[in-house]
Image 1 (cartoon, rainbow, N blue to C red):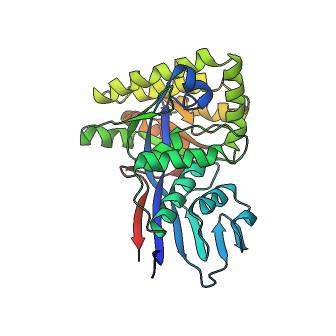
Image 2: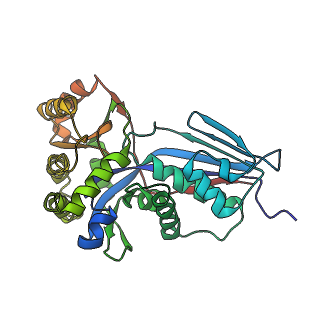
Image 3: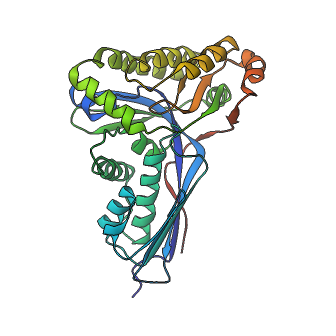
Length: 332
C-alpha cells in the first residue's frame, strides 16, 4: 500500500523586516519580550520532494550541492539531516531552488527550512501542520544544528506570510497579528519601497552570536529596547494610513542597529546609505543581520524620480507583497 505521495512541491516566501529585529533572539525576549513588523514578498524558495528511483538512496540537490547517500547520518547539510531524521524517510529525492541568492538578508535559511519541512510532511501524508507548528519545528531544528544564535522572526514570517506584527513573549510563545490596511494604503506603501542589491554574502549567525553575547552582558539592552519601541509607533502609523512614518522608523532603526554588533555596516554601506538619503529616501536599513545583501529604502512618492536616478547604478529587486506563507503548490 502506497503511504506517501509521489511528488510534492512547496513555495515559501522570503521576508523583509521593517523594525524590531534582534528582539526575536531568545537571549533578549526571555527577559524583555520582543516584537517585529515584517512582510513576505513574491520571491520564493521552491522545494521538490519526490520518490527516488533507488529506494535505498537519498538524493539531495540544494544550492550548488548534490548529495547521494544511503543513510541520513551521512548528509552534510545539517538542516536536511535533522528533517530527514525527524521523518525517517529514505528512497527520496529533495531538490530546492531559489529566486534570490542565500545570505542576502531575506531570511533564506529559515525559508528553506520551512519549505522543506512542509514538503516532507506532505510527502509522508502526515497531518497538515498549523503555521505555528511549522514555525516552531523549524526554529527547534535550526536551534539544534550547532551552537548558533537563532532568532524567531524568519520562521514565523515564512510560515504565516503577509504583513504581520509578531510579539515574542517571555515564555517563548509568539503572538501573531495581521496588519489590515486599506488596499490603496497597502499599494502606496509597496510602491514607496525600493530594494537595492549591494552584493556580498553574510553569515548571519556570526553577527547574531555577537548580538546575543552582548545582550547577555547587558551591553546592548538599551538600544535593543529603543528598536523595540519603534514597532508600536510604526504599527499605529500604518493603521492610521500615515505610511511616510516608515521612512523615519527605518532611519532610526538602522542607526540603532549598527550599534548592536560589528560587521553590521562598513564604510561602503554607510556611503551608499548617505547617498540614498541625499537622493530622496527618508530612511532605510540593510535587511537581515547586516553586512551585505539588500538595502531597503522608503522613498516618498514625490521623490521617486530623483531616487531612481541614484538606484540605476545598482540592481533593484522588483517585488510585491505576498499574503501567503509556505504553500503546497503541487502534489500527486
